[in-house]
Image 1: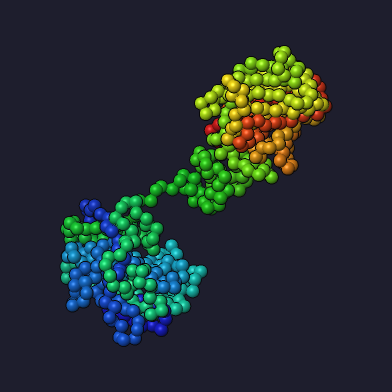
Image 2: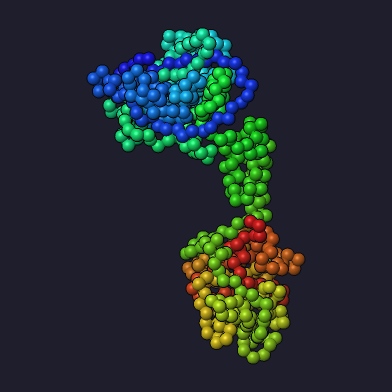
Length: 559
């Protein structure tokens, strides 16, 4: 072997030898081993010119011909990385059949200005045993053979030029020349394969000492990939298919001679199967990356996400994916914050807001309209337990309340309910008090949701709710409401006629239409808050349903 000095940043010389072997009947179990960086070289081979040089018989792990021992054993190794990052190289080394202390380099990989080039052993079963076996080259995922020389790697200025054919070639680009030489040795009994290397780097391109790489003496370095099946093989310049090919070659090379002990070949674990949708995309010539981009909003739901991918991959149509996403947004809308809110976090509101019930009405005389007599309030007793104490929810108004049907006030199952006459408005003050002593109880986080905000035909009885002092307003993506933020107040107004058939029955079981007609107002650090309810002119009155629940912030069930 020789190392070639080229007036460029770095130069490489490579020799290749090929082995012939019979097909192996019994497969061997190959063990993964730790891959170590090459960190010990005979750097004295510099001819006094200041260049860092790597020279000699690189595949032995023992002292050889008086030279220092090479610490490489079996697996994936860094060979050389230039300081400027333009050039990287790795090698893959397998054990040799005739000596457990010897390892042969069976593959080399380069990365030059982002282009990856791998020099690979032949596929098992394709060897002819002759002296003119070509070198196999993979460049940017396309496989070539040295008998195709010369050519330029598409999309680059990297040329592959013939050199002493059929034994070698050059990999040439600006500032770089890698010389590859293939030689076939016909042993009387065995053909064996290895690659020797000779590398030189100019002084200004030698890596820093903490890189622990080419031309740096020292103890064993950090491995490129450890011996775990879960190792990160992304550092390898070889593809998964390359690793499989290399290990198949190493296995057959050793098993031909009956050697099983000590055989080691590290490689990544098998790649997981492709998702069925990706298989469909590849079958139809669709872009898998584009499919994932179109369906990205559904990633939180594996079933919906994969269904969307399938729709696109079956037709290669953006419309198919876009329609699926639009339908899902309508059927499974996410909560959104109204623009202008000083603070709005639906997930936080959903998990932290205190929840109350309106099941127990112990006083029902809101605004003095009845049906009860006495204190002009609606009191929902034992509405919640806060810090270990029972609390009541009390509704009052400091204005006039006009109702069409007093008996409708109070509750409707799990909802609180107020019946307001069309063409009027009322301000509703809500206060939380201790059930025993009547003192105000401050809540860190609470949320008021108004439901069933619809209207009559031709905009009769159009409903509006307004809340001041809330941290914002939360509606669903498919909302039918017109929501506006002005100063510290948010308002939501109906826009679609409704009927009794679409009324909600539970704040926890809303469908897509019901959540589209609801709005949640979150509050922080309060013991009382208020809302103003308004109805446009219309026939009789309409019911306003509410719950101290963060329904819209939590989204639809199962989402």
